[in-house]
Length: 172
Image 1: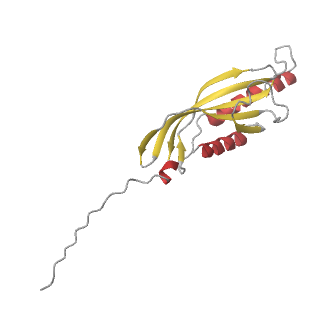
Image 2: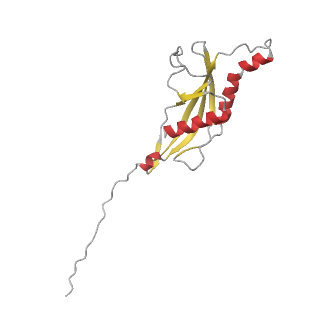
Image 3: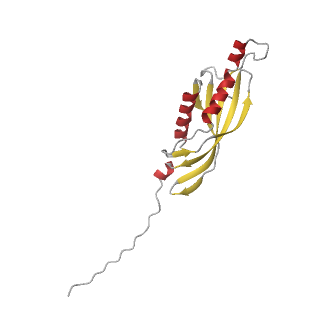
């Protein structure tokens, strides 16, 4: 299920934004940047939050599912009213990426022909985050409802014992 969601979300970011690098989130934004494994900016990281699932029978599960997109860029340059428009516009590129990701996912859904159906995504929050001063990050949180049918493919119902009656009557 998660690999299918990741691929759909990755494609959405690539198709609808100017983000240059997309990956799963595993703390890349915390602390100092690792200079041995740099990545291009702007970048986005997809984080799947802990969600509980309810079984609906036959291996199908549903969840109100939360995910986050961490939009990361280098620190913005001057953006005040005294700065020339060209510099201000360049410094707003991060904010444009935040807007583009928000627009790309708000209302986005999986369509119906899929084993992992998700309803229209709703943006629930945006939070700025600047861990060390060398980058700016906005964490955008979305909510969707998921129906996961992938478990149904491996679901095997309990075997039932059939009762057979044999009528052995001899012909006289």
